[in-house]
Length: 276
Image (cartoon, rainbow, N blue to C red; front, top):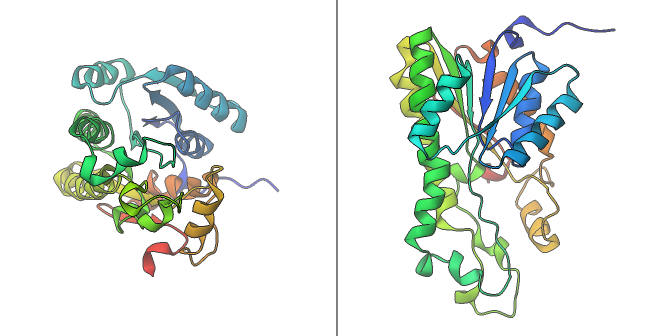
């Protein structure tokens, strides 16, 4: 028996913009919103990845309205230009980020450690993951407020509420401690910052019916190093990493009227890791 979508979750007639749409979770966010009737606009600095994500949406949701957009979220002029081209956007998902991969590859470990972390790398990653979210929110949130409301969803991480356990990244036991790879300082700092930005935006535009929340996913399995996976799973009460599609329902909730009385919150979905 076919069941109709509960009205509070229905996104028909709304347009959603997802940044970093070509990444691991970007297509999943777009599929989630398209499944509930939204027209989705998939933005990425890599147009080929955005197109692949749009193809995934159309494959998953027959008849989905999915279009791609080449966009550098760190460039204020290009963000404003995109807003002019797109017109009304009801939902903004700030998903763009540089997730520096931890690897035991020679020469990479030292660059990830705080003692040798370069200002250039710091600025590049902050520009995309944090400043980019501010710029997108500034432009599209202002338009939402003028139009009578909208939703901003910031994609954070379980590392927005806990620090990375650097023991997970010791992929080569033969190396001395000072040469072991680590999760860079930028990732956790940016994700913590996104939660602060979420709270600020939630109160700033509350009277204009613009809601802003954050979603903090836990580790998503994507073929990572077996030693890393085993170590991480040992820290997760549910005993496994997440599937990429397990955050869809949360995105649907946070971007729809089902969460109409929720703003400024950080929803942590990490299999229980952060409660230990």
